Image (tube, rainbow, N blue to C red; front, side, top):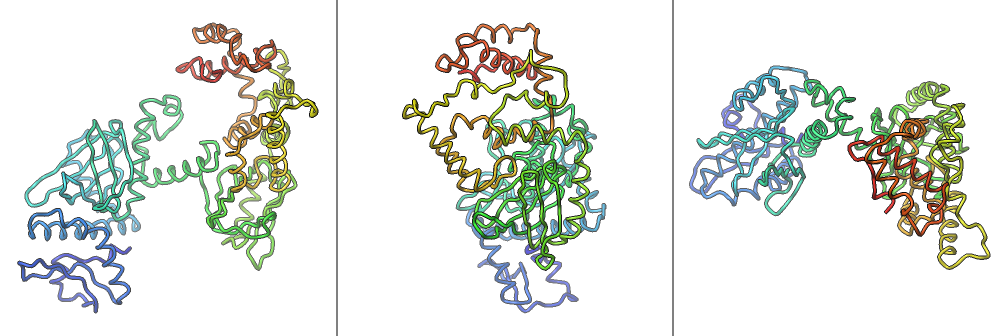
Length: 537
């Protein structure tokens, strides 16, 4: 890396065997005759890169020091820290445990934490004590964020528990180009001058999230082996998990999905007659694409919907994916496209089991047709008759006016919105695998018509994918919750008759029964919350 070439130590200057580079950056204060070699390069371009880095990350900070000796000590400490961190990065690649063991010994000696506390990794950085940066080491362990610095005879030691952090963010200002802000017990702490600040922040965010989940999300804690046993947490595991969570959140996929592969490629966009440059992301059950050329185009292809994967146009390293919705997605310039085709074919054959076929029926009925009640899918799969406990027709279908001649202005606007969405569906597809573009976002901003609200909410929230992964789950909850008597069910019964008075669907037994099922099932599923009153306000 860039900072790995910075050689500002006295040893480097005194090393007579070292090759003298034609370009160097030297540090000297006005009252000193000693020059310190800060960086070297074999070309003007290389040394200019080093100079730019120093300008943005070091020079802006020097004005806060009162003496030249402090400036020199800070610069020396900063460069030594960068060299040490670069060496740490290289030993990680070489899987040499000695350097990490050395860091672990310093960590244990400095902070005296419990023996079971596991050090994940450590970074060279500066901690701002007032207006003065203190160069030292930031240690990230399973339960604590720790910092240690010993500079000019002054020792700084800081330990913060992850579950005591109320704010964690990346910030920047005039003095600090990029820094990490940590707030705990009302106190602000700033760390800056990281070699890889994004990587550091990613790991800190993951460890802080783990601490919160251990405290508040008991269900996730019990089901997550890593959370249950913090000793299983590793740096590589944290990075992988963070990328998977970002992937799932961006595409609205079930949180269990793990990002397996990422391929840079082009996707043919038929309605625009052009290729969109972006990345294909693959998990256990989904193939996704997100553009990176400003077109805001994204696609989600569930493997349960895929009926064929073929090589297309080998000269352009093409991959063609066909779905049950009679849509073919063509990706080109895919590196190792032949291996990718083979992998995807294996994945698709693994998802052709009866269970996945049933998943497909659920998602197709909920995403491609008119909005149905959440309980329709399971009844189609040969389960026992649930007609007494669930509705077989959506309330919108029963109570939505269909007489086009007697529509008022509000209903006409709704019809116009519906027409706009129908045109979009014809042009860009319908259901989970539709092309999602800027036009899709614009229509959402304009407002979703009532007739499509249920379907599009399922689609854009990702709930349709959760339904497909858990067929029959809602019906099972309804059956378990019926007949239960709790404080939540008493509150629900009191409010049912006075809920949503402006909507005719909830002034009849059919609508009230549907509302009762949803509220009771939710209270049963989330007893710590109980009656979610805001749903009917």
